Length: 612
Image 1 (cartoon, rainbow, N blue to C red):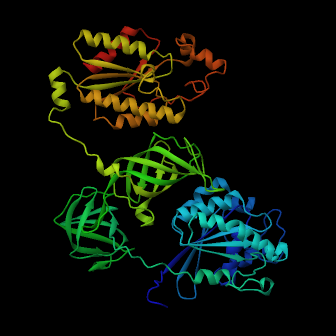
Image 2: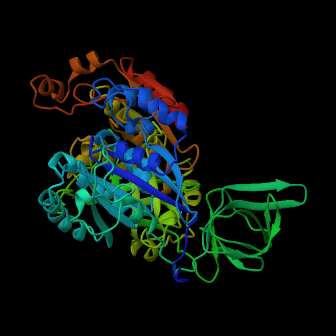
Image 3: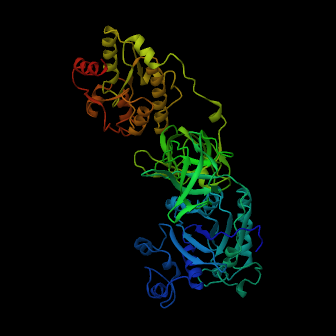
């Protein structure tokens, strides 16, 4: 073997493609013919049959060897990613991920693709190229899978006709070129009968390359030219007279004596010791779990990154990224999610959807949102800087997942294209005249009263009465009313979920500026979604944000109907009215709840006690 070719001890392989293309059967046969499956499991696959199976009794149902869930066997489909392993001839370990083909389980496939070195994309020769085939190819390209092997399966059904194979190769070649997949090949196989899986057969005499197993074994990891060092801090290890930063080296190699930098704080130190379970070591290569002891001791927390001080990633808070949307609810730009990379987690907002990628032809389609399994180029803003690299430079430090802040479900998988230049061109200027000085000048405590509730609940009426009393009391205040703001600042926004999220974000930012000016700010805004209100709260200092729920029954709001909105909704002319065509998520931890049917004066009195 050439010294320029590195031999990776573990190779990760992904089998994907559309449903019923034969992935489980192919992997099962590969494992059986390489004697990588326990004999009792093989015996069970001879006797067990799915409902409707056409495999003769006594023969092996190879798909049963990977479909282990009861629901998978009952339905004859793959639901979750099934992992199996085998040894290659050169001693490397092959970890095989059998991914589901159904569109609803694309998220499972994407997770497996993010770690795969080789991808087998199966195509059913009897059905041809299908949308899920193209989607999986696109995800493999975005995820940086180094080798893609397109397996043309079920050629036995067409009597191994070369014309069928050539037609499919001709159809998929432009897609592979468009996706810039450099290492790709095609193999004609019959997973059911074993042709070209482990051994070449005479029935495809027109095919001159190696078998599937040959193509897998011939793959070698490309040597890395990047000397970038990186480790994520997973744990602060403490004991008597000991403090170390524990994690796994994800890139490069650290040595005792190296100068390192902690990100995002940019504090520098020197490695004085590398401790492991088996004792101290002098160097820690990529993949090594280690505890670093630094001199001098610097402040670091879980989620920080340690890199070489001579070549480090500049933390940023604006990124361009490819995003695979996995959530059942569509992506809502301007809504805050959690962005997670390794042990680092920061609140983040998708500020812009540049385009959606049409998986059929690669065209960039204008989009305001992304639905489940759609792929797009987005811009992301994080609440604080995070040290992410380009995904093309390093898969581990350039990937992230997007998590819904309410359900904590993973709803997106992202790959950083690059940090945006504006992230390093903008810096906060701290003025000497600050919020405490402005509040002191006015003799009041700056706060924001956020009143939420259904349309017609009485928010604006209460806000108006409250401001009158504050004026009489000499308190400097201002009301930010939802409808008034939509006449100016927010006139470009509608009432979809994403527009409502942006509406709340803008109002919160304006309110923050006014609080910084030392004012008491009163917000009267429907703001129906809890996650948006919670995000508004987060930008204020503790104690500054007071959430007030004006609780009025929906039927009372409909009777009042001061703007005629409920009448329009009943007539079908207003589909997104909160409480009718769109849900209202009641506060669960509001500082105050007001009865919207009670006397206005009594409600104002309660609010005055809170403010004064």
